[in-house]
Length: 321
Image (cartoon, helix red, strand yellow):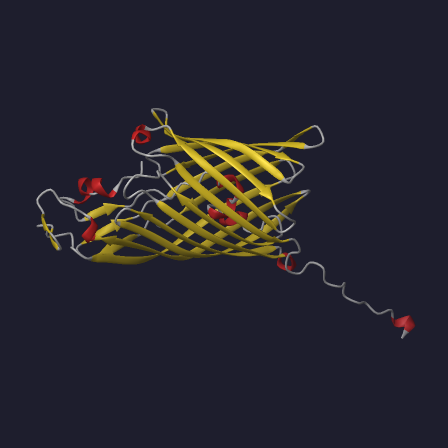
């Protein structure tokens, strides 16, 4: 489970290696599969921009704040797609950022598409030592002395290359995806200690089936694991006339604990712009000190992909020359 900065010392003291937290949580994960799987970049052959912001565990000091932005560019003439992802995640004194470039190759399987993708880029981790308090530290007014040989009283940061791989299958009725994020599980050097990042595996499944002529049901599931813990998210969206949608998402960490129940609402404002909002009801013990989580997603889509709409190449008939 994601740890607050006040508990960070349980990891730091007596160690020269610290393990990174898990990736940020997003309730609206089913709407942005490219965020966690490079194989899904522009799988629908649309040029698009997506931005999302999330405030988790509102009212709790040091609670996570997360943002990401996605650019997806289809390249149908190459049966491929290009993508850019930027993410920023803040948790108390910690800050994680990454910038990734993606490329995938899209194979046509009858009426379905299989995207095989890879992402590469850099991750940056920062730690503001002035926000931390050690059990043996001395703190008077602006004086900060942790009395620890490892932790600085100021800001520290480090950077490391990283890459992801993924496969994403999409048909009219089914979506499946499998991705590995941070494949190399690299270490980031911070002053006197190393940050050991974790490798994460993601699997998703989603289906769609109509109910009458106006309603479309879309149940989904996503499973993520670092090979130590497994977290499963279950979701259901109900779309009305392909313009308005709502639903719910249930998130748990393992069989012995649960995290949140998310309530989802959204709408397509026009053919290019759609918005979605999620509010999480906290079900874990944090509900005693948190008033919930808020998430907002804005998606702008240009329906014609790169290369679409061009005039066909003219082939001259030599008999008419």
